Image (tube, rainbow, N blue to C red; front, side, top):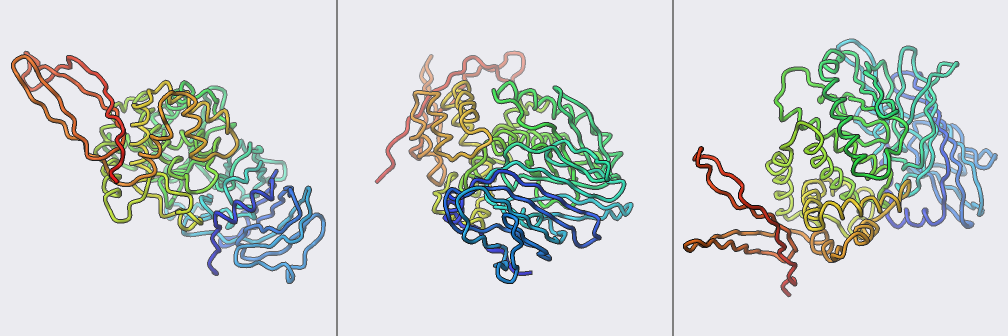
Amino acid sequence: MAPMSVLTRDEAQTRAKLLDVHRYQIELDLTRGDEIFDSRTVIRFSTRADGDTFVELKPAELRSVTLDGTLLDLDAHSLDENRLPLKDLTAGEHELRIDTTMRYSRTGEGMHRFTDPTDGETYVYTQLFMDDVQRVFAAFDQPDLKAVFELTVTAPEGWTVLANGITERQDDGSWRAAATPLISTYLVAVAAGPWHSVRTEHRGLPFGIHCRRSLAPHLDTDADEILDITRACFDRYHEKFEEPYPFDSYDQAFVPEFNAGAMENPGLVTFRDEFVYRSAVTDTERQTRAMVIAHEMAHMWFGDLVTLRWWDDIWLNESFAEYMGYQTLTEATRFTDTWTDFGIVRKAWGYDADQRPSTHPVAPDPEAVPDTASAMLNFDGISYAKGASALRQLVAWLGEKDFLTGINTHFARHKFANATLADFIESLAAATERDVHAWADSWLRTTGVDTLTASVTAQPGEWTLTLDRAGSRPHRVTVGVYDRDLNDSRALLLRERYETDIPQQPAPE
């Protein structure tokens, strides 16, 4: 198989200036056997000027291409690796029809196919993150060309098809998913197979959890816990966010051989099915699963409703979901000590990554992410753990009320669209008198750690706390004053708690 060309930031910007993509109609036939499936795509788009562009796809066989009703000669319009050139487009509306055969994946990219050795049942699901959509259907594959997606899936008898929207079985045996709102190509999702499902309804929306049949007893054992956490987080996010949940249903599918922890597909979150516990586990493991549920749900707003424009801002998707997941789990569930787990495990991951030669700013310069391949290098402890720590410090520095006001402004300004770090900072700045731009420059555009050292001096009747800092970033810290418990010499009782600012200092020249 030939390697795929990576998409560069400059190419994406050029294409975004030329195109408006309106709607995809995708037909998938999953009944063609163990190796291939059929994929037919209709893309309706418009161009703002005359020009050339390309659409991405990686087929096993390209059967036909029709542009504006004209069948193209595939010898004259051949694929260049994963790119199909579209030349001499005139300004206005266009319709592109592409008929292909695609290959199933066994490595988790595109449409992954798995046969359960326990009972012989087969399952398929998509993982389209970054640039793998082209392994499933033809697309203008970049996050800022959002569109409406309509999916029809033909599946073997006895299978259930899940997708981003509510799916219904048609009279001809196919499954049709409700049209999505405007979403990015990498967020389209399909999961099909003889799923074991537990379904319910919450706040008028269908909720479901799904796994392969051989894991049914284990999912059933934990179904109440999983759904209780899902409902609690859903309700808490609605208390925080003014924008309601933006999709028509919420399914969580625990899928086999998943090569990530989870994926925030709108309306159909996929998780590795190791989270369906087969035996007794610790409460920490249950907390980890709950945290992933909360993390992925946060993405429904920050990532799916409002999506990055280019991959240099992937840290903000992940840092926001990481911060919001831990905070919301603490507030809304029995797992009230999640920040302790974060400090011991996740934050150490960030510290380690930030003190290596390979460190990078939380928010890298756009020029440092020139293409999709380089973007993959930023999925590390800095983008997740350090970014979440910085956002937690930002909330302490701004105050949660102003932070949430800024977040809700951000959602209102950019819903079903794309935004950058600059847009995010502008939304926060509108909610406070603090200099958020300077904060972002000092915390997000730099590398390395600050060190705070506390020392106490005492005189009769008087204690003095001094905080020394190695670094220049602004900090807001909480100080607690404790007394020994007279009834228990091992315990302390909080007497007083207050917050103080350590202002930003000019960086040494």
